[in-house]
View 1 (cartoon, rainbow, N blue to C red):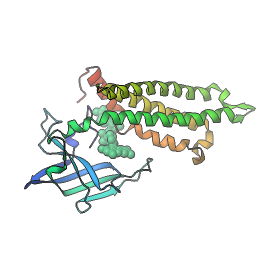
View 2: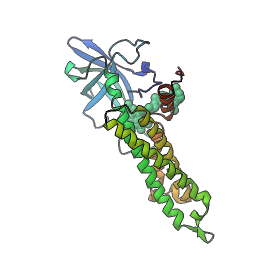
View 3: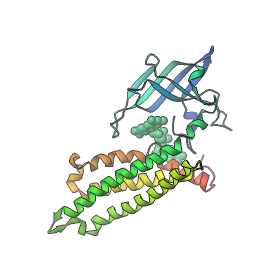
View 4: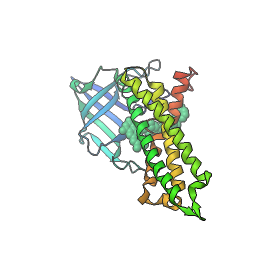
Length: 262
Ligand SMILES: Cc1cc2nc3c(=O)[nH]c(=O)nc-3n(C[C@H](O)[C@H](O)[C@H](O)COP(=O)(O)OP(=O)(O)OC[C@H]3O[C@@H](n4cnc5c(N)ncnc54)[C@H](O)[C@@H]3O)c2cc1C
């Protein structure tokens, strides 16, 4: 599903399921389907009723169906990072499904899906924080050991401070991510905390990786030190699973009550 947060135009849900006899036929396309090269099953959000502009989140249904290659053309996307798992665009033409393949209540698929998004944001926040901390460790060690012009480069505050700044912001993001996780575990609403934690973590972690890469100088580009990989990997969290701007849309609309931009 195209990221379904506040600000999302759900007309972009481009997969439709139509009743055919006592079953369903699904057609459409989905970009950025993770692990479709290997998957036997796919969880698909489909539109099953025409879009009502007044209730755009209604009329969608979740299906958990066989990813049958006879009806699905799966094309891998070459990408910047995250090579541990494949990403794909998938073209679906008449994929058969039954009522038993429906997850939850027909027409309420979007509402079911959204329940899973906050925990995903919390997990992503911690992933980013972990990468940021790993990069800071390498950066701090290098700053403390590399000697240029007779002294360790970390003695230059222009080298040390970006690392320290990222540490402070990673610590703050982690506290908020813990608060979001605690609220989720207690069954409390955690959209504000989960979105904010992901937003702060993605930003602080990327800056941590970037500061570490800069600290390593030329070796920042060397695969041996891993920083270049974290720098690439962590960049994704500013875009996915939700773009930073969409988090700000959510916070401005839902937490601050500012009128929507669309
Ligand atoms: C490696 C990777 C793996 C992924 N895996 C999955 C997956 O498994 N399943 C899945 O469903 N999706 C997946 N995605 C998709 C991901 O969730 C989306 O790419 C992401 O949510 C951004 O949506 P978009 O690409 O449609 O960008 P767009 O919505 O086209 O936005 C493009 C840019 O414009 C900005 N923008 C758009 N509208 C506004 C606005 N109103 N205000 C301010 N800025 C705006 C966005 O923030 C973004 O920077 C994956 C993406 C990547 C890169």
